[in-house]
Image (cartoon, rainbow, N blue to C red; front, side, top):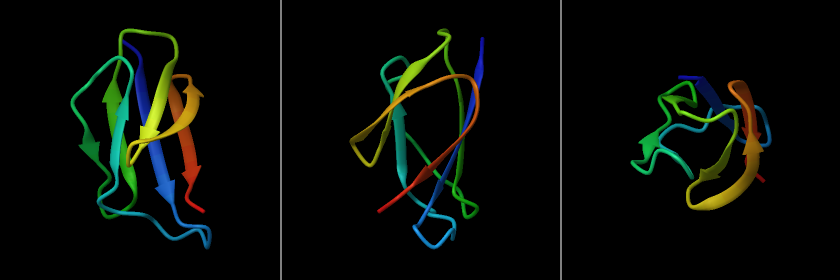
Length: 69
């Protein structure tokens, strides 16, 4: 299964820890670590990403950076 690495950061580039990350395939939420990173596996080539319940668009496996505004 493909792996997704999500990096969540504040507008100033600082890591956003403790943010809830989920997607439309794996329903259990995970939370970003102190480096703003969350990693999950999904059985799809792309998923819709949510951070703190807000849709952030479709993402593909690999690394995705989400900047909070």
